[in-house]
Image 1 (cartoon, rainbow, N blue to C red):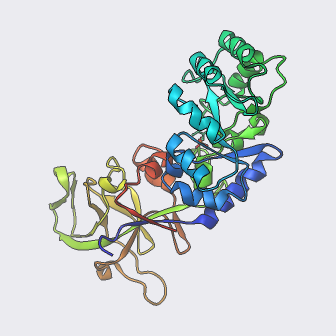
Image 2: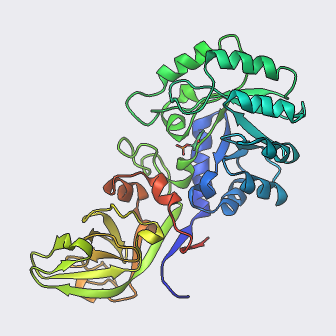
Image 3: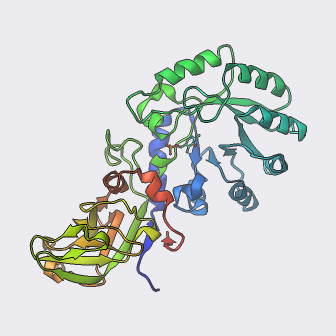
Length: 369
Ligand SMILES: *Cc1c(COP(=O)(O)O)cnc(C)c1O
C-alpha cells in the first residue's frame, strides 16, 4: 500500500452502541439512521452489522436504499425526506420504501401514482424546527386525503434543541396540540432526545450519531460517560521529522512560531482527507498512543504535530520524544490500544461537531473493518 492514511471501522463498537440505544429505548422501536453513507462509516458494513439487531434503517439517498433492497435487505426502510419528484414514486412502491411526507404536493403525487393501500407512510409535522413538515391546516387535509389510501400513518417530528438548553417539551406540547384525537403511532427522538428525554421517545426513535460513538451533546456529557465507544478510528503516520530553532515557523501562513527548540512530526493527513482545516494549533492528537497537539495550519495533505515534550512510554518499546521517527502511527481520532481520542474533542477544538468529521471522511482514505 502507498499513502499510510486509513480509517478503521470497529463493528463490535457499532453493535455495542446500538445496544446502548436499545437500553434507552425501552419498548420503543429503533430506526438506525444510516444516511450519508452511515455518517461516513460505509453504508453496507453498517447495515450488515446492525441488520440482526435493529428494527429498520432510515436514510435519505434513494439509490442507496434501492441497492440495499437489491442486496436482499428485508427490514423496513424509512426515507427521511420522502421523494423529490414523481418519477421516484414507482421505486418507492417497488422496493417498499416508506416515505416521510412533509409537503402537500407529495401527497398528491403519491395518490396520483396509485400508491398501494398496503404501504405505510410517515407524516412529518413542523413543531418548531421550521424546516420540513405540516402545520395544523396542512395536517388535517393530508390525513383526509390519505384516509383509506395507505396502510398506516406514523406521525413524526424532529427536535431542534434536544441537545441544548431549550430541550424538547415546547415541541412536544405543539405536537400534542397538532395531533389531539389522533390515535396514530409517533416517531420523535433523535440520539439527543433518546439519551436525555425518556418521555420523548414515541413509538419509533431515530438514533444516528450515538450509533457511531459520537456524543450528541459533548459539552454536557462525553461519549464515554454515555457508554458509547468510538466506531471510526482515523490513523496515519509521521512522514518527516523537523527540528525548529527559536523563531522558526511551521506551515502555511506561518501561524505557529517556535519560542524554544522543538521537534515537529509531519503527518500524512490533511483537509483533503477530511481532517478539519479549522483545527487550530493545540488540537489533540495521539502519536504512538501518546496525546500531544497539532501545530500551525492544517494543509491539504499534511498537518504538523508537536513531538517536543512527548514523554517516554512506560515499558519496553516506549519512545521518548527524540526517538519518534518516520513511520510512527498517528491517531487523528478514535482508539489505539486502550487509549481513546474522542472525535468530539477534535471537533470541539475545530469549532464543529463529530457528525461533520465523520461525514467529511474523503473518498481517498481507505476504510477497513
Ligand atoms: C439525521 C436524522 C436523525 C438522527 O439524528 P442524530 O442526531 O444523528 O441522532 C433523526 N431524525 C431525522 C429526521 C434525521 O434527519
